[in-house]
Amino acid sequence: MLHVDMDAFYASVEIRERPELASVPVVVGGVGGRGVVCSANYLAREYGVRSAMPTAHARRLAPHAVFLPPQFSLYSETSRGVMAIFRDITPLVEPLSLDEAFLDVGGALRRLGLTSAGVGELVRERVYEAHQITCSVGVGPTKFLAKLASGMCKPDGMMVVPRGAVLDFLHPLPVSALWGVGAKTAARLEQVGLETVADVAATPLPRLRRMIGVALAEHLHALSQGHDDRKVVPEYREKSVGAEETFEVDHYDRSLLRRELLRLAERSAGSLRAKGLRGRTVSIKVRFSDFTTITRSRTLSVPTDVTQEVYRTAAELLETQVPEGAVRLIGVRVEQLIESDADGEQLMFDAPERGWREAEQAADQARSRFGNLAIRPASLLGATPERSGEFEPKPE
Image (cartoon, rainbow, N blue to C red; front, side, top):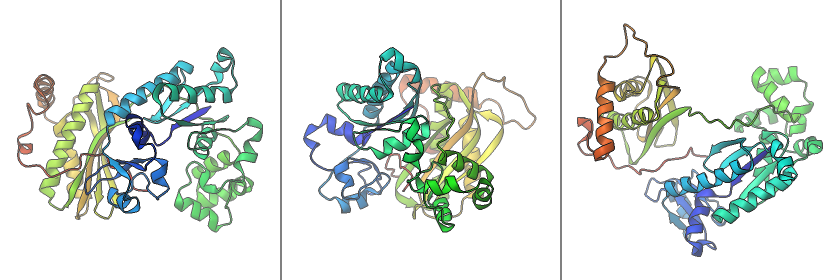
């Protein structure tokens, strides 16, 4: 298994386009007052700048850094080129995001006449030659070990974990290295004296179950022994479709928030229809001014791709399950997706009124011909709140 992770991907692509920035700290993210850091090169990280940090805080840490707004179309184009290189080496490629992927190269070793480490070097060379950006590669017998290794050799490195040296590599590491151990679980384990992976491996499974629960105990105990039976899954099926917005100023006004939900529901449902998908679960995401973030969801009786149904559910969740407060970010997401023709549309006594889908499909056709503003809900024609327009990562 290989885990390939691009180094400071967004920032690296920007520096490739502007080589004069190679020797200075570079931060990519929202440049407005409510912006958030999406990526920072390693010179910026030396000053403490990190992804998901408010841009205003990053400016205080590195006032001499170059701050750039993100160009997602450029990053997507580069990502497609990088993934094509991976697939030229092996068809077993599982992208995790724009800038990282798992590769199963077991079947490619004989064809290429290389060791797994040789394939890792080949990947790094081809990516740099084609795109002038670097990546770090972890090589190991399992996905967990490969991903762990890639994180330990950044930037622009490669680490190989041989099958015979798995436990020697794994056991000295802190418990936080285990996939699934967050800050709270790590603190709980450390309170009972389990500070390293070796400590978890040496703990009898029944005792570990009593400490942290059956499922998590069995998962962590297997990882601590070097076991991870997950395969590389090259067929990617979209799990959810959604949209979110960060406001330039916090908002309390529920009528304004409902209008924004309608705007986001329109975008989300439009994406579903364009992709031939419907979803059964509608969820909303709300981030308050203190960065506290909550999500609330409801599962529908019938999968939908209709804006009005998505909006109605999202608005009800806002009114009934979200406390009052100053809202920084709001989002809508549709989950549990199926293909529109995967199951025939089931008619039910309590199903929503018919006609909205047909009207929205006609509106889609008009927008595709005359532009996105050709047809809009009347309530969205007035003034809109100032929005940063940038995706806001989860704060660290």
